[in-house]
Image 1 (tube, one colour):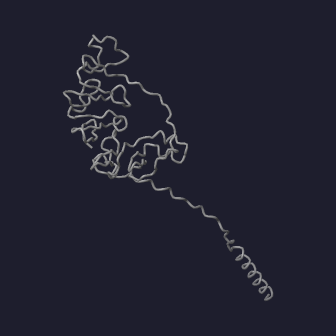
Image 2 (cartoon, helix red, strand yellow; image 1 turned 135 degrees about the vertical axis):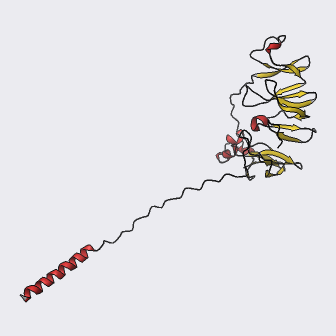
Image 3 (cartoon, one colour; image 1 turned 180 degrees about the vertical axis):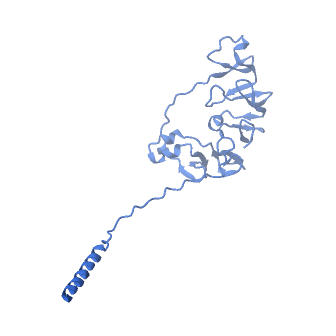
Length: 256
């Protein structure tokens, strides 16, 4: 009986030991961890580039002490005045079509052209000079379909009016004039909306801006208004009251 008991004890011990071994966890193999990359943080908008009027540029060229810089829509200088020339932020087709692919990005409207010490640059909206012009980088602008103006200036008896070219036939019929000749001078500005262009006009030797319905947009209080691309590029007018100092105004006659 004792022998049987000894045998059972030995058997139970061996069985328990074997079970203990079988319950041991297998060694963990090296498993490569998947690294989750964080998405790049979105660039925070510049609080200085305030937008009061959606149709206006966020940065506007402004001259101070003989040098140009850029102000925001509140009139605060964001890019200090240090340039001989500064124009609106706009596309430069010569750079957009550059044979050098690396510089084509500087032709977009994220940049503006400035000039200092006879050297031309493209600057970003922080004022950083990101590109210096090189003749070898300039490509040829592609010809785009030109949108013909619907209206044109018309002179009669020394005065200017406005006609719609496609309909005008009889100068003796006052009903055929969009604006009957009554101004000393008229110039139809280039713009995107040819059905409602802005028109620089002169009355009593002073300049203002009217629309095709003869509504006064900018009062006749300026000695000159430049006939350039300021309306097309920035929906603004470059004006002066003394014939020397030019600055920009918007269609509300607000000065910048």
